[in-house]
Image (cartoon, rainbow, N blue to C red; front, side, top):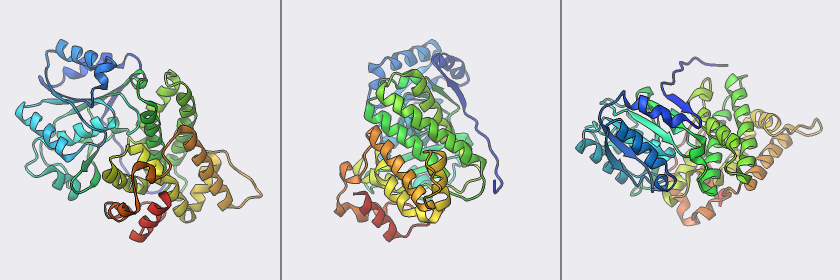
Length: 388
């Protein structure tokens, strides 16, 4: 491994069928006023809402509801959450839902006591938090983002058509996260597979960087093989506890900062996909699946060694009679076959993108420099054309 780093993850995780039982002990550490963050109401249909509220009331907490968090949380919604927190002197924010709810809760947490415009400060100027932070906890109902154990918070500005993530520090990471795989059983298949691909791509974004012999890459390969195996089972039987538990646990380790250690990391699929999402409001995982293969096929010649390794170690492809390029291409073909088997979106046209939108999507794409190729503007445009 190359480079030096420090590692700390302050989030306490409770995993398994009885994990919600630990909510009471965690709540006792915080004040009375709780901002309960959730989405469109599915947690009321599946009973999770009633369970959480019962625990909050048993702990004599005052509940201030912040419902309606959308899959791509907006600046407008963020401002609503800030208002709720300020008006009610919120002591703790509890997010019950998927990654969007967790992201949103963290964005609210750093904004309540912020004297500046949070969008400008955190998402345009990318400044650090220099104010009091309201602590956050998560009860996860969808596996995908890994937001339950990291400092990331992605927010969309609908007016400027920008979707931007800010990775905050340890003090913003959830204080605890409750992960019961059974809470993910009622997700529609589209959301489940979108989350699965989000997990897989998180690993790819970190894996496809660097050429050194890196322990993080060995961990990444194991995580990728796990998600591939479990995804095939979950698609056929969404209530297979073993498969769903492995998917949920892999999601957490895919983006809790561990496998990024010693890596430069890429993140261009996310940058392009997020810009597509800002223009279409499409499901995050589907924006990633739609642009991934054109991007990887474009940069493969610049990181051929790693793409060959990916084909061999993750997909089991090897043939002494084939060139490195042929093996690498077969690896990406195997990845495509798996993606189609899951039913993922494979082009941005299906998400509502047309040729007239491409320039705007390019303009909204942040260029990263940690991968095998630092893209020029015209190259992003070419990749988008290949993604149509």
